[in-house]
Image (cartoon, rainbow, N blue to C red; front, side):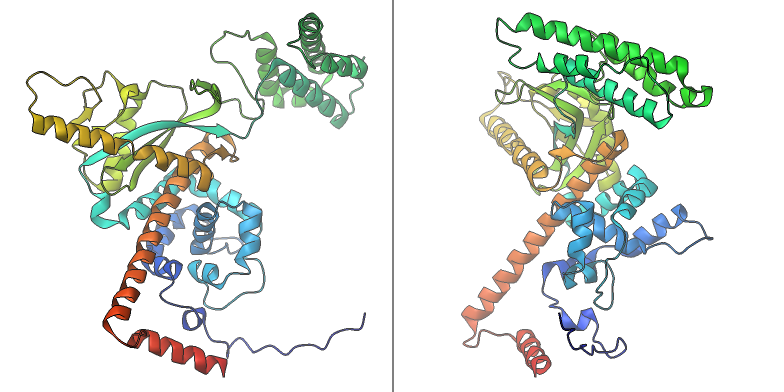
Length: 451
């Protein structure tokens, strides 16, 4: 093809800044002006060394994390779309429009690991404090849910197959010649699992599972004998995990459901469409009337809901700066009446001496408690909490906090958008000329730039 003529672009020192080009009424523009970026830079400065190659700006990395969670994108996607959106670049602190990607997608992984749960909790607290008095209410609503991990539904067949494949890869990596690889036997055992619920196939399927466990155990023991001492020591944790998986029974406690995420546990939900969920339990606290999330915590164990209240209320106190007086919960928290000075209200049969006014107030409170259920649904469908792809329990804690942060920011953006629409309608109804003085100046600047 014939080469195209080179387009002479404007020099950078003559190019207008993003602040001069963008619409200041745009909600993301206003959010960029409102967030305490200086506090983030000061708090995260201790995570960086004075020597070495200069790192990316803290505002850039924090902005990318927030944009990713707000728009339900992956690390690669948010970096690619950042180049196309000038408002995203202004939100991340850039003065001029850039044509290249801001960083490698893996830098977001390293940044999350660097600031950890403490750093993300600081960002979450700032998102709640944007709402002012709505985040300072003395009554909160608390509920728990399950944050599922990015794992397949665990079965003995899948776990045994994964152990065998890992053993094959480990032997090939270190040039270990296995006495037998059992490829044909593994293939036949896996084929036997098809239609395993059929009465004529169930016995063959059970034999196939026992065969897979035997083969996996043989490969693990052979590798432990033949691998060098240094490699065997490095793989000791994995080998111990393999042996536990092969020895565990259906009704054992503390089972391993995934080799790459061994910390997850099974939570029986009792739902018709999904009886079990595999991940970690998360607790959320929301202000009763404002609907602002003021606590988001992931729990390493499948604890009773009532035992998680002290940790949740402690985070609420950190975010609000005060201890909530009343916490409204569902019947899953039965048994807890008061936690460190906070009264716990659970739906229950009213006492006989309760007045009609008190009964009406209690019913109103418990009706408001239901508002946290759609909030949890939005966190899962819109803000990447339905399936967590971040690694380890640290990833679970970070993902819950980032999802709650995105909810608070989206709520603030919507309130601002409604306020702007109300102001426009008000001036339109009061004045024969729909454009206000600010809008007129803005339109004149657009006309001038167009000329």
